[in-house]
Length: 398
Image 1 (cartoon, one colour):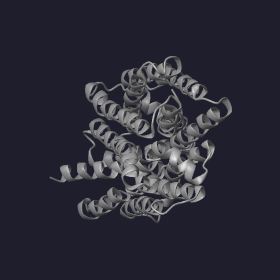
Image 2 (image 1 turned 180 degrees about the vertical axis):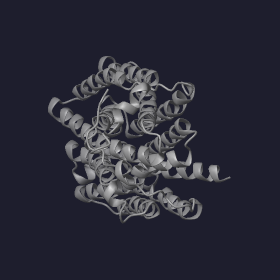
Image 3 (image 1 turned 90 degrees about the vertical axis):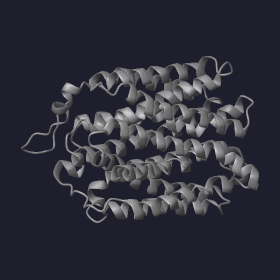
Image 4 (image 1 turned 30 degrees about the vertical axis):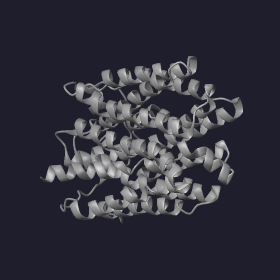
């Protein structure tokens, strides 16, 4: 019974971590007409929350000195709900951007704690549970993208399409208060405290996580606008994000399950990256031929990459406390990178006049990550992540 309740909590928490991002893209045009947002300003609605998702986990070793897991979860969920409620009344570009920062801070706190929490609650089912967490996270994002335009059309206000996501956040607050386990959270210290700045493998994992997921934030930010440029509608753009999400969920759940007997995560990552590569090449070379197919391929690859890259990180260390702190560092640096990517792709769209330069950049990133994946042989985990006992600062990279 306790395991089922923990699993329910993981799903409810994860569902709230993406609507504040994915609800933006399908409603971008009415928002721009109402507030005067430019493409680069609009990119901040994605980039700033993702940057928050990066900075907060990096501060986690210090935040944990005065913020408990319970307090952090409540505060983070409350910030998400407050930002969504604020969006119900917005009528200016800068207020919209400020609400994105508030929501991003809330997501950052909750998301930074999730890998360690999953590792502690489900140590013998880590890959499967991380797959479910990733799938729920992406499902929440997909629902917001698909339902946002419909809610806007029904109410006549784009603010409703953004603000309605306060409801699941408030439900998650209630569920956490009532259902959370009451045992003490382990205290972190030393390496477990998250001080990974001197470890080269930690930096490699963080760069890998950030770049391997950079396509997600760019697709969420710009896919609806790209669809409009090719004669589509706002509703159709949201449906494309929804299609991408369906395949993300399939990839996050299916590929780890298919390869569950393999201790080596590289075959799954190579396969997921190759599928992504095919999708981005399709957008570059034949966007009008089968846009749905290219988007589905990108989604399938992105979903599997998110789940497998987090699992790869957690498997570098044996204890939940250390693995959780490493995951916080990896997500911290990684999400800073992931947040910068859509800003760059939006800038490329502005200067070039179309999205071809943006898709070219993402294609090159996928090729680079295919090459980097070779570094992550399981037999090298311990050596690569080890710290010299004398200083605890330097690290080696195999």
